Amino acid sequence: MIREPMASFLRPVEIAIAAAVLASLAPAAVPPQIANSIARNEATAIESLRTIAAAQARFKGGAHIDTNCDGVGEYGYFGELAGTVPMRISVGNPCIPGAGSPPDDNLFRPLLRSAFGAVRYSCVAHRGYIFQMWLPDRTNGNLPIPAVREDRSGGKLAAPFPDPVHGAQMWCCYAWPVEYDRTGRRAFFIDQRGDVLEYSNRSANPFSGFPALPTYENGPPFDEAYSVPGDMGSPPRIGVPNAHGSIWWVVP
Image 1 (cartoon, helix red, strand yellow):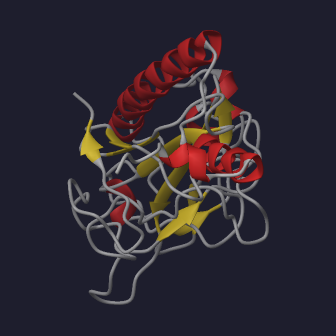
Image 2: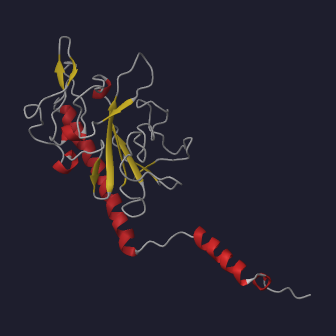
Image 3: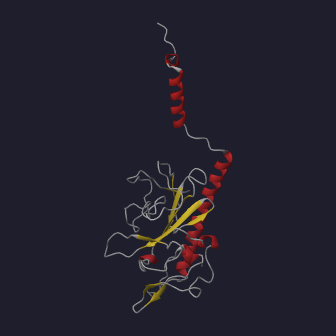
């Protein structure tokens, strides 16, 4: 018995449906100019995160912010590092964090370009990527260390202020595409340790676009790249998937 090809048993409509299904499963072709732009934007995002880490180290070393008056410098937000908003100051006795006033409390010699001081929705857009800075929030005892984002327009001009002690020890920053698959694909992370981490960002709902208010969806939560959920003080989660399946790796 001679078997005929499977296609011969299918009606034209069935063949068309099968072809459409196969086409939907195939990866979409990306025009070369977009692919090149994505590669450039991703490389720029990695370099920008390393520049941010260097700026944070200089900022802390200069003790530009010391809200508990212990002589130890604290890390800053984008608006503070770029000198576009006043830095946090110490108020009261004993010292506690408070809001600074422009222009006297603005950083005299900014450590980041003014583009990184253009904060909106607590984020900065630069070369196809969105960047968001997190500093540690106050804790009660030895509970996990939560985080607090920058004000919507930059810096921190109202409570809750970052914790002064933990704020001298840690910070983190994420970067993700303005528009997934057009301005970038991968998501990136860096903290005070200095290693840039990457996540493929391939999921049904990739990180893409400015955080949607009021829930701040679209961007990574502060603990996305940490090994312990809700704890900014835990080590980065490298090579281990979380509940959503994301895996972070060190960028070479």
